[in-house]
Length: 149
Length: 149
DNA sequence: TTGCTTTTACGAAATGTTTCGTATACTTTT
DNA sequence: AAAAGTATACGAAACATTTCGTAAAAGCAA
Image (cartoon, rainbow over all chains, first blue to last red; front, side):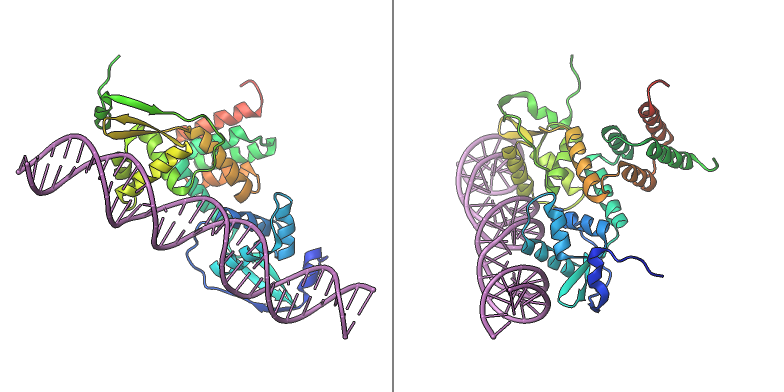
């Protein structure tokens, strides 16, 4: 099967090397790391340049800063790196879901005293959701409430 | 009106001084700060000793470490301080709700790509809630869905 | 070829966070 | 009264995070 290559994928035709690291305990990513991870989650394997451009849509960051961050994250095992000729292509090595769970747990524990209800109510109250989204949530609640529809 | 004094309140009969600071923009509390804030939120105005004892139920922390943290947080305006004779009584100066909102926003933005639905679903899915809590949430959803019951 | 651009590597400054040792003063116990 | 215990203040070490300057190598354009 084939598909159209996205702009940043055009470089990926000649992969030389894959750096792998064994799966380890993950530490909570720092703020800057999380910022970069969310770019990686959204746009898949991308170059440093691409990451940096995305970050700069929100705030001014130097190219070498982003590069250094990615190098550090690579050492920590947060991202993986492939080489295409001279340039490196980065991907997130931890799933968004894993981080979501971890951070949610922590937030729940520290800021909400462990009450999922309070957290959910505040999230729903403060951020507008579509009819469909609310419907999905109700469906989940029905499932949680016990067994058959 | 009178009520029974809690153990740590017995010291509070002779308040000499209240340190006030003007309300300012709040920065996200650090992890250690949040840990302390959650103790203050739960147990109201308390001594350094009390905070430290609570922290030590979770992990080992030296007394002077906790003291120093509280002093720093006091400078930052995160907590206020009253004196009762020789000892200081600390309270949180920012509401739990304000911090909850702030951290929730951030988490939503960075880890969940802005989707409140995903966050809510994950929170509900991973942490068991009581029948009553789910009922409350449903009630809120009905309210959000539009007007009259 | 020569110079301009883009890339990674690396060290280090700047900043922020956490921890604790030591000093000093006051209170309580012996 | 002396000793032991308990307070706060403060400096500074240890650590972590973020930012960027500089260098060297590779690719590109004239």
